Amino acid sequence: MMEAVRPPVCLLVNPSAGGGRAARELPGVEAELRNRGLEVRTEPTQSLEHARGLARTAAGAGETVVTLSGDGLIGCVAGVLREIPGSVLGVLPGGRGNDFARVVGIPPEPVAACGVIAEGFARPIDLGEVDGRTFIGIASLGFDSAANEIANRAPARLGNFVYTYGALRALATWKPARFDVTLDGDEHHFTGWSVAAANSKAYGGGMFMAPDAELDDGLLDVVLSAQSSKLTFLRNLPKVFKGDHVHEPQVTVLRGGELRIDSDRPFTVYADGDPIGELPVTVRAVPAALRVLLPVA
Image (cartoon, rainbow, N blue to C red; front, side):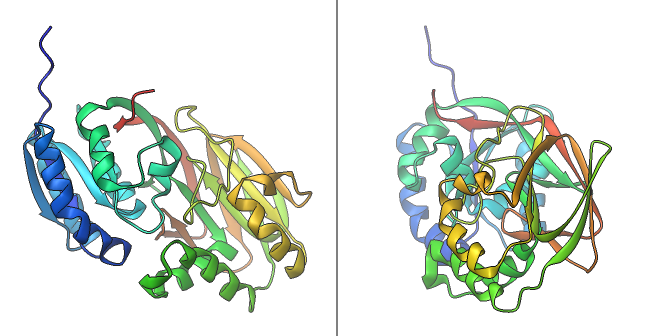
């Protein structure tokens, strides 16, 4: 039986992702994809809006859109491709966190990950929406808003530690907030740290905020972190990297399809490392919204 011919690839590269890592890896990635018999066209991105236009054009031409970047570009491109029938997304890790690749088992080195582009299977996954804007991983707010803002300004040399750095810096001035969450009609009110709506398991460079979240169950795992002392927070922070924090008494995990979130003070909602909305917001799961090239099971 003859092997099916893969469509040509449009490789979207954020040159600044990962402190320049994506740009450094690009020559090796291009060579590896071509060595595997793929036709490759490379497009550097100048902004998320520019990336959306490039992705729309490529998918409309029947190309497989592949990102070499961090999770922010993945979520951005996913929002475009979900609207184009037959489109497929490929992911090569080129950022600092690379949490989507980590969760689905894509190799952490971009050249090695090219094997998934050449030989992986296109499988449907869920996406999330914040007031209509797409994300692929976890949307969160509250303490996470402050930590993300700091992390996004931090020096690139910190690598994956940038997210821990952001959390520790944000801790100094943090004061508990009052959150109002309505999940599929059920109301939840609490004072504390944060609300996270998880389409995937991890964010922040390997923090498993929602260790039981699945990309194909049509639901969001909603993690509510209630009030505790700053000392307790510090003690529990390392537990997030294994997902063990969900067993702590101040953490509640719910599951549902749509939630409304508000608070007693303004917060920016972050998803896939980038700002995506301002409270109040509605977050919902979008089942089987996009086909993504994933490793052979």
